[in-house]
Length: 416
Ligand SMILES: *Cc1c(COP(=O)(O)O)cnc(C)c1O
Ligand SMILES: [Zn+2]
Image (cartoon, rainbow, N blue to C red; front, side):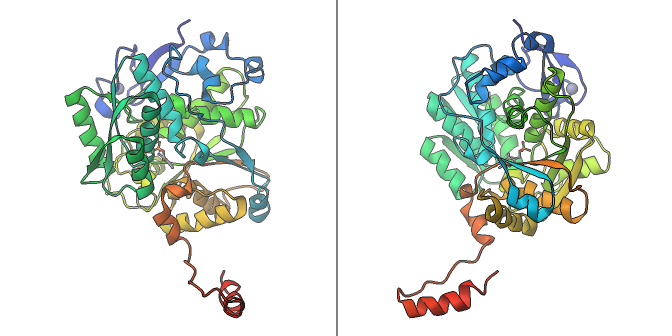
């Protein structure tokens, strides 16, 4: 059975067979490719019964609609089937009927990127590649690093020198060859492209490699199954390059085409005010991006040139989506708010979506009877420095009870 029909350029719509390794040869690197599956073929295997009887609680249960021929490159790390929590305390507080939280920080290297890296490494092994490279703001890097370590694949990682320590530590502990680039993510990305060409490495950068978004789409498949094939009104995600949100959209569309769900959700794209090229383009109904130097505390979405911008825009236009920007202050506020009402601690980009939800509520853009899914894309422990900016560090006190009583009365209770 041949699952893949063709690869289609997200910019011009031209189609290609799989001999094209990365992007559309006509559009260049902005012409990222969508993997279009032969739904009639896939349908023969991937049915509701197949899913209900499948005991594999990982992304590999979706193998019939993943862009791999063989299972030989599948890492034993457990990816996917992260929990979907019903956030009852938030529902009460925000007066929304149903709020679900998908905790992607529960993946092996603690972010949603693991879904893409799992496919990237498996694909590299399938194609017989021995060295993989990627540019990343941090999470795609630490994720590739972990999967490559697991499968014993040499890898080069290009990251901006401002990468949070937690993510850098992951790379070094996993034993990647780390290229710490003097510049921001945009610089690191272009530099990595140059190096990949020169050294003929396999490129795992999410935008350029057509297959990785198909890893990310599994987040949508899982949400659908975890909600018993019901579809929420809105699905809220933070957006940098645009791979994650277009992945979620692809997932919803494919399950729709397979007849597993009967409607599609509205996408909400949340970007930082200081790095909002996708949202700017969408709001001004454009199909091109203008560059501004990115500036936000949310490093994972600190992107000036959205490398999967067309896929993200297509997804937003098709879903009649909503684009909302949040400030760094709102992101930090959202971090503690979410943690204190759900027990889920996300990194700044991980909670940016929640900052967006708070804003939708404030601006009356959400009805009380709606069902909302919020994807928390990365774990808070990855970036402790930002987290500590959201809170006040306690004073050191002497271990005596009198001092403690005074301290509790004056300090702790006095605090918000
Ligand atoms: C990569 C990432 C995002 C954004 O995904 P894009 O595909 O770049 O839009 C959001 N949150 C976290 C934690 C990420 O690592
Ligand atoms: Zn093209």
